[in-house]
Image (cartoon, rainbow, N blue to C red):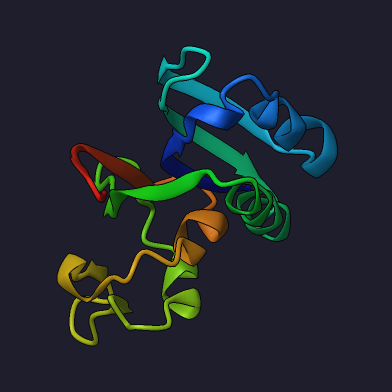
Length: 142
C-alpha cells in the first residue's frame, strides 16, 4: 500500500462538492481526515492521509487538481525501528540511493537517513515492518 499525507485547499466555489468521497468510490482509495475546516462559499482546508495503490493515488490527486484543489505534501521521512529489525537485508536490495546497505565488516544493515529520498520501497518489502514512515506534521510544505 502507498500512503501520502496531504494538505488540500479547496476554492470557495467547490466546497459543496463531494470530492473526497469520489476518491474512495472512483479511485478505490482509503482516506483518514485528520483535520478539516470547510464551510460553503469559503476556502476550505483539509489535512488528509490517503492510501491505496500508487497508480490510483496519483490518478486521484490528478482528479483533485483538475477540480481546482491545491494539493501539497506534508514532509515525511523514513525511519528504521532498530528494536524490531531482524537484519535480513531485504530493504537493501530495494534501496535505489544505497541509504540502506550491508556493512562489509559487521554484516549488519546500516541506514543513512540523509541519503534517503523517501521512495518507500523499503517499507513495502520489510517483513517485520521495521522501516516506518514518519510524518513531520510541524513541517507542512505549503
